[in-house]
Image 1 (cartoon, rainbow, N blue to C red):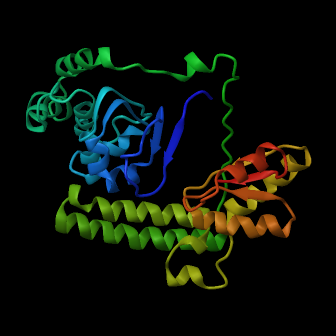
Image 2 (image 1 turned 45 degrees about the vertical axis):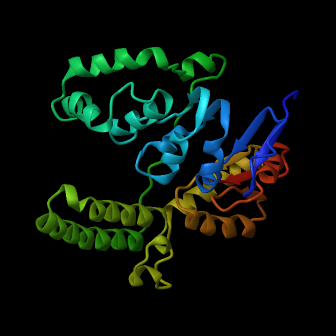
Length: 293
């Protein structure tokens, strides 16, 4: 509370920065006002969710690399998501040049580790980086919390939903095989991911799939949506408050009217939510029973 904090919301000059102790900016603002941020020498720079700069070729990463500071720190739960080149980008921000340029890093570390499976080179890289890494694991910070209980509910699709699934599976498999034959396995990944996405959508609710057949009024059965409502109602009657997560905002659009029809109070938090504080406060205060996220 003793810090003077400035939230950097919109395009403005940093010339009148002082006297602030802390400036908070989004990566979008950093990128759009990159020159102004680079012109300012900072005492400290901290990047949260630092995997955002994992691709060194992006303008966002380059804006971060241009920052000068006496001290730098990054925080990330996923420092490596796809390949070791992402790790190089993070350390190029932290300690420029320590791992060499990107070509040298690929030659001495990435290729031997990823393609040749060299355990000795992997250990060498880990030893070189370990003095710079502070890793926090759940067991260290959540000693008083009970173990998480995971209950898996296996559902049978309705007959119409199962028929649609089989139709999508057959058509998608054919398209994937054609792509593999044309481009090879590595270059057919988009087709594979698209097929998997459609199958996941059918399992959630047939109305999510952008196919003419799934838009017919007859295919509205959703085993998952029906099971969700069946699970929620007794929990709410017992005074429980529930977080409901979905990777599809369109699925939340289908859940919401079902809750409204049953007069179940809920709030939502989505990518386009501008006021994030109010729904969190309402849920924590017990005003609503369900939080769709």
